[in-house]
Length: 261
Image (cartoon, rainbow, N blue to C red; front, side, top):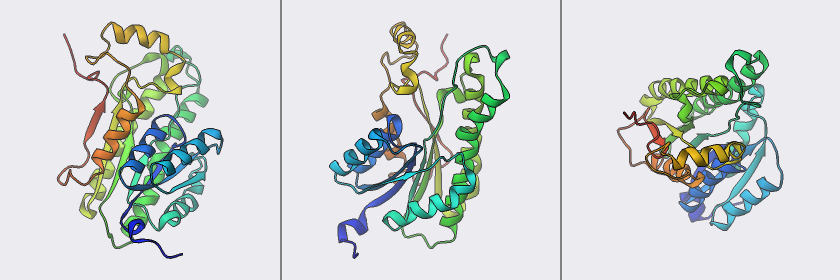
């Protein structure tokens, strides 16, 4: 099928963990800013269909890829499908991630829980980025390309009731620096976003506790962060306006990261 002139000029983005929460908000933000969107997630359920419909309602094309990114051996096929959906990808957003199954004493963390968190939150995006980067470096670029890794405030703020999560997200910070260095010569920018307390399914289980702490001044901006706050930040970083920047960390946390006396 011949592509229209409008389709030829649209950006193309691949978002992991894109069916709900922060991933959905990122997808909608890109759709609203002229990008066609490929989303990946582990389940093709009602939430996934709602997200696809939301992308299309915003004037963009949408494509869903069901896959567990922890299965590194399947990355090559996943990336092939993502690139084939709309004839290429210029932006990769490593958003997929999981929290601890149960918060508790770090002295009781099991190897199984540790391996699960590292496998999804760090190992998977490292190797997926490797696969995408190899593909990009083998092609003649027609447009600027960039990568955004969604980390967490827990990349620098310790939470002893979910130690393995903190460690996995700290690793994402170093991954961002490493890929920024490796890909800079090819003109591929790599950024990291560290969300603070964002209103999602992941934080819903402790929402009452966070409500109290936010009201008491947990962050200087005394409100919940919304997934849309993260979505807007990702689009801004990949807009092409930060020509001389790579490896940057952007805190979307209401000032939570600022050390205070």
